[in-house]
Length: 338
Image (cartoon, rainbow, N blue to C red; front, side, top):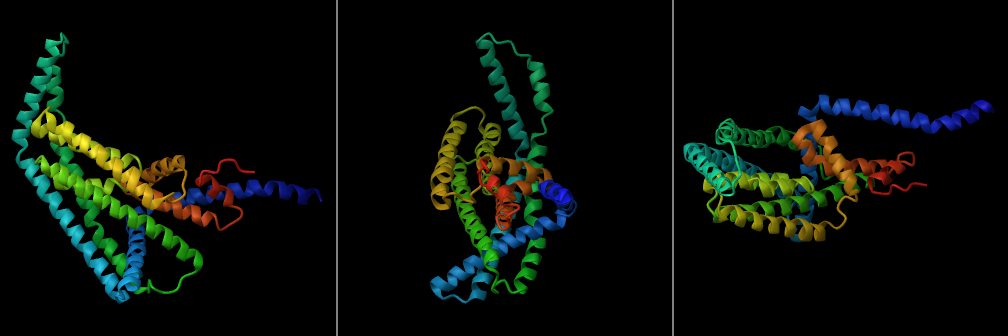
């Protein structure tokens, strides 16, 4: 009798310990296999999206399912090729004008030092010039471009996974639980792809209107960063500032572009996306931030891009079991558990 009561009292503790051990093992697997697992997860998400779009085309326009899949596949290939081409051309153009931008940077520094002296602010000009000369600005531009190209060229492995998944008959009937996950994640990704593409096109128009260098690359980065909630659009808004500074110095171009981009991301992120997504993935904002940190630590920049859909899938899986339901409620923002 005493032993049975002790076992019942210790059962929750045992469950928590098992969950911690399982989570630790899962984290180790995620880190160790990220080079293969990341492209596979992206391929799964991509199959969800094209499967949903193909079914919608079949219902709306009576397009054969296989033709819808092929159309989405070719559209994805074309966009990827264009993105790599734009980034390569932008970096090449920017690096070719490195000498001009260096002179403009020095002129801007001299202007700042002159203004500071007019206001009786003492600045060590030699220290400033030496510090700026050591900044690896152009190396950073090349590194960012190389990172984006590396991400995009990994598409080859992703496409191989996509082909194998589709060969496994993606249109086959699935359990209701799996269909629910696919429907919710697909809707989220389709909306995010559309609003990110809209933000990227508008950003390119704004930058092209002032003839900014790297406009195409910054537009592609805007598309990618828009998948990171809250933080991504903020970074995308500030990215053109150093480029415009090197190109034009301190003038009206920076202020105009900043105002337009802030208004653009506010309308797209806080009005259009909120209207279309509603509650989104039903995740608490604190959980979203925590998931961004966690997945960024596990999978780097790509983990931050996939943080929301991955966390949403985990939440939906946890909701299926009574033992893990409290954890799912916490992820949804219900911290007052009874």
